[in-house]
Image (cartoon, rainbow, N blue to C red; front, side, top):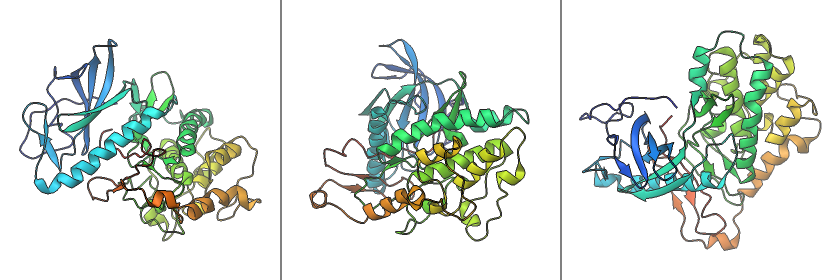
Amino acid sequence: MSESKNAPRSATPSPEDGSDALPFGTRLAEFEIRQVLGAGGFGIVYRAWDEALQRDVALKEYMPVSLAGRGAGERVTLRSRTNEEDFALGLQSFVNEARLLARFDQPALVKVLRFWEANGTAYMAMPLYKGRNLRQLRKEMTPGTLDDAWIRALIEPLLGALEVMHDAAVYHRDIAPDNILWCDDNRPVLLDFGAARLVLSDRTQNVTAILKPQFAPIEQYAETQSMRQGPWTDLYALAGTCYFMLTGRAPLPATARVMGDELEPLARLAPRGCSPRLLQILDWAMAVRPQDRPQSVAQLRDALAGRIAIPAHGEALADPQSLSSGYEKTIQATMRVPADQQASTNNTRAAAPRAASTRTSSNDRSAASCCRRSRGVR
């Protein structure tokens, strides 16, 4: 996490200046605010001191600056009554994300230690990781440093984090260099869920995503029955992040590639120190069409280990099930809703342009599983 100073408040809210940040020394439950680490359009991250455990933590506050600002004391207040519904939906998404992250315990996935609501908003406490995000790291590294071994050391732990999420039918949908921290002990941690959603296997998705164009695959722009989101969505973004790390430039946006793919493949660029096979696998994961990519973490792992062949551009694997079963399963499953869930009454939908959509169900199996984060903090 990069550090930033807490600037004086201004008349016009700005995500970057942290103008609505809490003053240093503010007490929130057992935490004391010590420093602003980052501020974005949907939240503020602080370094805070945990009095109970005597350690520093990262404390994230839900603060969508276009909808609300700092009122009297620590309280967050709406800028207009017309923002009430959007703010409430974003707040619920923030809490859902914290609840979801608290369920997972994976070294390469950020951990939520505690979350709560207070002061008209919500907070989550997380470990304070020491390191730099991949964008910062790329600027500092000398050419030729990122070889085959380094890229694999980046990919493999993150595949473990994605596998845990995908097994719970959760897709990150916001993987990018800014959202991956390279810790000082040489390991990656996936920081922000960003546009993350829980996708129940028996429900049709209906979400509005906030995207990073260079790293978001085409299915995140306009989802249809023939182009669903799934594990392949995160694998595209992960491969795109590797492309950025190896070349120093972000991939072309998927919306441009779909009309005529002018992205120069890694296999042709041949970055020094990387094996042709690794580069071909990354190119495969960055295929424009969802069905042309690896369909699961397991399939990508098999390719990295040399257990399966890499299909040529636009071709499927020899076994159709190994390529398309996951994709087709998601399409079919989202077209049906069990009767017991059709009766569920506490579903909330958000599709506001400033706060991402989420879907929550009162069903006990899924109430703790929906997630949407308050985007903007890096």
